[in-house]
Amino acid sequence: MPASEFWLLLAFGLLMVAAFYVPALRGRSRERTRQRERLERERLERERLEREAGQTSTGTSLAERAAPEVEAPDVVAPPEKIAPSAPPAPAPAPPTPPSAPAPAGPAPAAPAPAAPEIETPAPTAGRLVRLRARLSKSQNLFGKGLLALLSRDKLDEETWEEIEETLISADVGVEPTRQIVEGLRERARVLGTASATDLRGLLAEELVKALDPNADRTLKATPQGDLPAVLLVVGVNGSGKTTTCGKIARVLVADGRSVVLGAADTFRAAAAEQLATWAGRVGAEVVRGPEGGDPAAVAFDAVRRGIDTRVDTVLIDTAGRLQNKVGLMDELGKVKRVVEKHGPVAETLLVLDATTGQNGLEQARVFTEVVNVTGVVLTKLDGTAKGGIVIAVQRKLGIAVKLVGLGEGPDDLAPFEPRAFVDALLGD
Ligand SMILES: Nc1nc2c(ncn2[C@@H]2O[C@H](COP(=O)(O)OP(=O)(O)O)[C@@H](O)[C@H]2O)c(=O)[nH]1
Ligand SMILES: [Mg+2]
Image 1 (spheres, protein in one colour):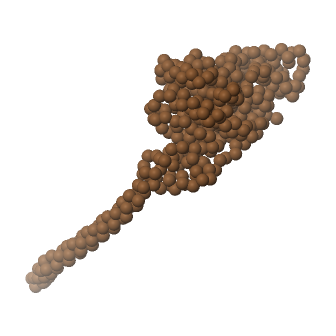
Image 2 (cartoon, rainbow, N blue to C red; image 1 turned 180 degrees about the horizontal axis):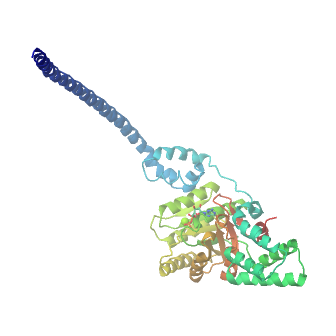
Image 3 (tube, helix red, strand yellow; image 1 turned 90 degrees about the horizontal axis):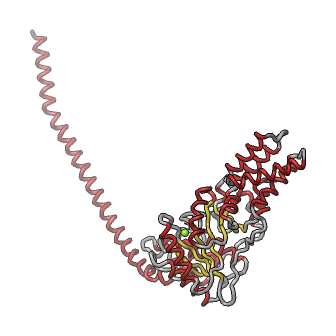
């Protein structure tokens, strides 16, 4: 009995203690929570005040910046003045005319007119030889693939078929491949047992022959009388027209010619900006119109400017939307007609992306129907293993490849030379 009473008393006592302490503890923890909340509120308030203070100062600095921003268009207006200050091509130039990230823009723009950093382009002679390593992808197929086949002990039917397949897979095209292989077989037969070295030599000759080595590949960029030579650059979007215009301008400048560029791709402001950047690097002038303006009007003004300033060459960059053949025809036709009011167009260059292979050839046909294409610029040969496309273009379009693009760098454009090209493809 006393034992159970003792336990009851103890339990009661514990209950009493709990009843007293728990609320006290709760109260204390509530107190702590409140304190934490107060501290949090204070911190937030402090942050808000700091933020407000920061904004005020940014606000003032924005207001302060507004001044140079207003002046900016004046400095920017002749694009060739700002571009030299920003050689690494795309970034710095475009942000200037819009608005916000201005501080970097106006700052370098100011010293630009005083001391424009005009680059000196690399000489054009022998560029293809210097850039031959850029053809390494194609070289694998031609140099390694074909030469391995030709080194076989026995050149049987199967081997010849493999040679044909290799050429076709390098985008040479079916008909040109047939001609090349037929020529090679015939000559190998006449020679009797030919060594791999002999066969390499024969293959090189057949490839050069397929490239029409006597075609006129000179760029018609010399003024006629008082009129500058006008070069129209056409092609589908992304083929490399604007880049090529920039590179050609450099080639011409390197050869001592003066150039005006016409930004007749008025569909995107960025296109004119891109051209202006290229032009600025070699100190050439760019004529541009409002975004969405009439491309023909820009082309006309560019030639007018070229005549007035007595430059040697006017290069006109165009837009290349191909969704609608009629629209393209109308637009390009108009650009050409309007330009011809000043005098004949010396050269219409079709820019083709080598990586698009046979598809590109189909697109190319559309252009040849619209304008009288006088030369092809084959770009991005550095990015394809199918260098044989040069042969297909030459043979299927019947138009000389005059220049080849071998990279994104400013001097990665080379005058096309069949023999140097074939040597580069076959390797040493
Ligand atoms: N690798 C490589 N890229 C090139 C070459 N030519 C142009 N490009 C790139 O192709 C892209 C499209 O060029 P762009 O001139 O804007 O084409 P557009 O739309 O015809 O004016 C750009 O990123 C260029 O740098 C070339 O020869 N090789
Ligand atoms: Mg373009």
